[in-house]
Length: 173
Image (tube, rainbow, N blue to C red; front, side):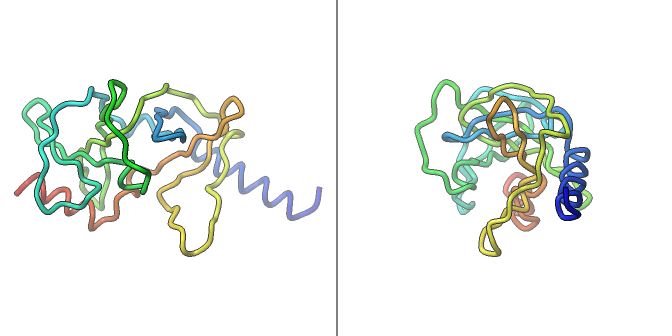
């Protein structure tokens, strides 16, 4: 093993140690994603979503969750994945997104919840780099489970600070 391989393994091990833990996995189109379980507040069935005028196309609208208005982001739209009809498996994962010093409770619309996985450090690699033109800072890493790859999301970075501010404004005013 040469010095480059040793440094590479040490870096991957550090990434894995930092990211190891429980993830709620879900499907969007043909891909599976994972969210840190501590970011998930709850999972709810798809319900009536009220469209809010002049919001970005990836904002499906808002829902009333036990008296609180929650914005709903369509992850298919946000990730530029071809839209599809909602099914009985389509649901909303309610997450807490940290933007600066504030927490924004947001729903993310996904195709199907899969399972909660405990992904070990040795099964997590850093997100691949695709060049400067492809944004991947919202990807924590890549989890390898049973021969499949799960894209581990940093939900705090899926929306930019300005997008999160827009969401907050849509639910307040």
